[in-house]
Image (cartoon, rainbow, N blue to C red):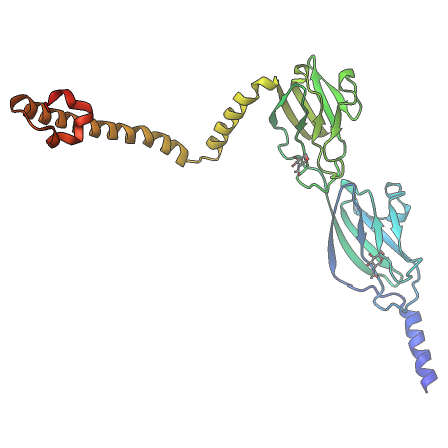
Length: 306
Ligand SMILES: *[C@@H]1O[C@H](CO)[C@@H](O)[C@H](O)[C@H]1NC(C)=O
Ligand SMILES: *[C@@H]1O[C@H](CO)[C@@H](O)[C@H](O)[C@H]1NC(C)=O
């Protein structure tokens, strides 16, 4: 009886093959350009033997097999050799056009659906001009980054406008005097393309372009000042800062201080004048002992007699 039961279960396994877990559910997986993702698919029962299975990608109303498509060559990997019921697919060096619908299809036509989103590089300040000030002899960082810092841009290119023509200065240094002076400031973050230029000279001023694709470009206008000009610019920039952040208290203070001083001076003068008038009228007509007017004695000693 026990043997029969065992045989029955064995046959059940044999006939059903791999039933994928999460049948009927659509999973949404997000990746970044240049990164990698694992599209999950596994048999619900880890004891099953897996027959044939495929990964399909939906394109133009057809299902294209990932393992027969050139597009994925060198970028696809399975794990089923080590763990036979793990049918997950790893896609590396993701591209924008990997985005879409995928299906893991096992022999008795049971599917797992996966939607893959691939986030690419959208530049912060795309199509805008950023103004940067540097000082000759020092280095400067021209800012440029993707909104998703994990996304690797299609291209990483910087150009400089020399004689009305944009020429590449990173990665290829097409202009001689940029050789060995430019590098990415943050090379470990795929989405940060900020460029550092060292040993600045006034010749470096002008327009730069951070180029990712024809739709993704940031312009940088670089001003180069002499180091002596630094102090005046610092006070200018703090002035601008208080304007940008709209800090109201400082302007109010500067308005109030003169008024306050003015009122004090006016009141004090009136008191002095009254005191003087009182003193002169009393001192002039009758001789008043100075002890009576001791509070103004230091100023008006000449008006009274000892
Ligand atoms: C299958 O293998 C991949 C890669 O090792 C792993 O990330 C995933 O969790 C595995 N899936 C299952 C269900 O074990
Ligand atoms: C990119 O790198 C620069 C230089 O390190 C840094 O100033 C900037 O904050 C970084 N950008 C982002 C968005 O992290």
